[in-house]
Amino acid sequence: MKDIQQIGIIGLGLIGGSLSLTLQARGWKGKVVGFDANEEHCQKALSLGIVHEISEPTSWQNCDCIVIAIPIDAAEKIMPSILDGISAHQVVMDMGSTKASLCNTIKGHPKRSRFVASHPMWGTEYSGPSAASNAAFEGKSAVICDKELSDMDALEIVEKIYKDLGMHILYMRSYDHDIHAAYISHISHITSFALANTVLEKEKEENAIFELASGGFESTVRLAKSNADMWVPILMQNRDNILDVLNEHISQLRKFKSCLEKENYEYLRELIYQANSIKKIIH
Amino acid sequence: MKDIQQIGIIGLGLIGGSLSLTLQARGWKGKVVGFDANEEHCQKALSLGIVHEISEPTSWQNCDCIVIAIPIDAAEKIMPSILDGISAHQVVMDMGSTKASLCNTIKGHPKRSRFVASHPMWGTEYSGPSAASNAAFEGKSAVICDKELSDMDALEIVEKIYKDLGMHILYMRSYDHDIHAAYISHISHITSFALANTVLEKEKEENAIFELASGGFESTVRLAKSNADMWVPILMQNRDNILDVLNEHISQLRKFKSCLEKENYEYLRELIYQANSIKKIIH
Image 1: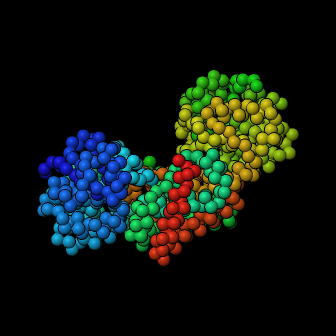
Image 2: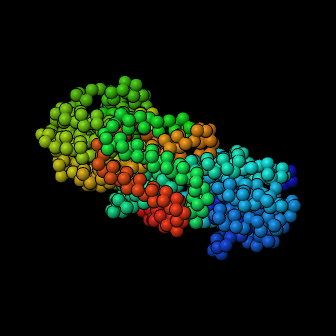
Image 3: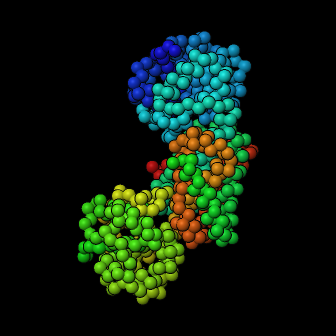
């Protein structure tokens, strides 16, 4: 496989920014060009060393790989024209949180095989280039979807990028990815948003939240700070899977409610024991 | 105020153990005697330096302060006899997560004024002496309840202990404490237990949870590892307040559900914006 000498990143926020900074921090010496629809983000990305140059993606003929790191609805919109514009040796990858819809949009595209669909399982509740980290992604999983639809050399380049970031790579169908992502990531965001709204609704003394909040509250509510521009499209696109898990979640909460209402503390204890078994999976 | 030379701790788990280890790590040179109904915990606490000696609380005439750090139902049971046994200069404090019921139980006790009701807003999802930390509590709030019912010198001793731990002290009525605790702490545990049960129910491929789980999932589900012996009594005792906030939480989740079902993405965006305002309170 040839060396990756130049990468182009569309979207210079948390994910695109962290990709560049972490690759560089881990010793990659190539050039990064970038573009962001937000001019302030472009300037910030330049000053933080996320990119060496800001330019239009139409001029990125020298990029070995073009990375799409923008909200998934925007990614879906630009993907066909990005593919239209690349040459036969260039690769396009995305890093979005849902995969089935995007893969479906471009499934008939003549250059589909130059695209690798992927989702690195890393993020924070912050956004924009200032939130980017040079120690991101490491030790986490990167999911590559529908790999049989990508050319071998395109796949190798994307695998190399994720390995250079210190990630381990999993392969699955885009359809399966979206189901798992609903369970493992998307529902957590909804519960956190809803918990924040619950507490803001019930606790009129904001000072009490501020002074009493402990680590437990902070960790369950932290995702509620997440960006709406990123999350509305994810929740929209993965709606059916998320509704399925959200219904289950509401019914699990109702079990706790019913235990308390009926003072059935034996069953309450069983529900907690059952929840404790997550220990075996998440250490 | 006289120096605190000896402390007795009933319950040598996460909270009692961390109290001792942190006081010692921050320079306190006094003696710690302890007792735990679990003999293994006693031996472990001795070997970890949590206590210098294991003995029966009935022999603790030399303790300036007796700390109750056991599940709140057990604390409520032993509190009257602990108060019966102390002399006029000794102080008793508890560290439990609910306050109204305990305070009510002992409100007519002739030595009520030697007791200080408190709740340090710190904990982890782990339990037992091995989970104890020598860097606990610092920077968090400690709530002291119904302080007018405690003697001034008793209050001063408990305040000194919390200040020595690096905590800032808040005062409130035990009744108000329990309402706030339902919003700020107890509901987070229920959502986390229910989220764990949701994912364990829906995601039959445990391997997928293990491999895909990111920081976001881990942080929302981490409290689900919490100990049932501690949490069943808390949820029991604070049942009315928790039901109130749990009903609100289910109704907030239903708003998200309804947005997805009706594809009302404008309102979904509003709900997320509203949740984002937790940023102003929790940094």
